[in-house]
Image (cartoon, rainbow, N blue to C red; front, side, top):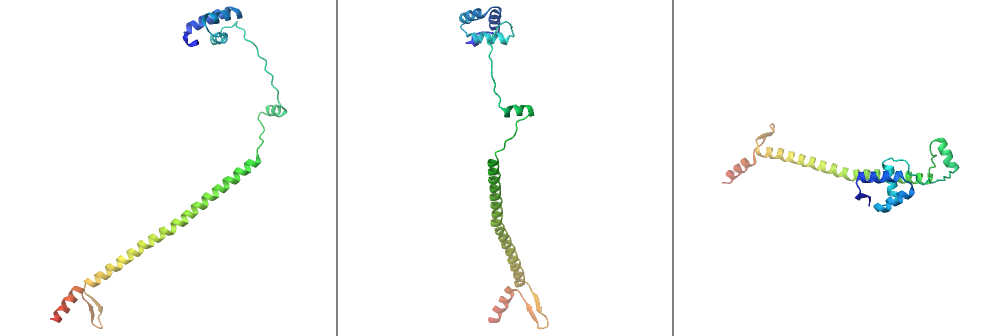
Length: 166
């Protein structure tokens, strides 16, 4: 309803309302098809004095606890120790389970890593052994000079044996 009025129209209505009594406000409300509270709100918005509002009396009852808290400046803490102990225990158990799970996971994966590392090392050792053996089979060399034992490549040995058979 109040959206159809411009700021100037609201101000004019509020000034008219502030110059009269409650009867004038009701007439203005009927004339402009708005509520009395809306007109009083417009009067407050433009800070026009003279419109009386209904005074409300509020009764507060304060407990001794509240009064002591206000005098002290803060409210006293009343901890729920059962809940506090529960959450501390629960948190400790969860943390312990997480740590044990991490240790178990480490224990499960670490031997696998070590086994893989040793397999790679064995493969390297086997590869080195094969290379050494291959180089012995393909080269000439002295095995025992006192006995007169020498090493010749396999291809050469096969050729010599083939010549002996012919």
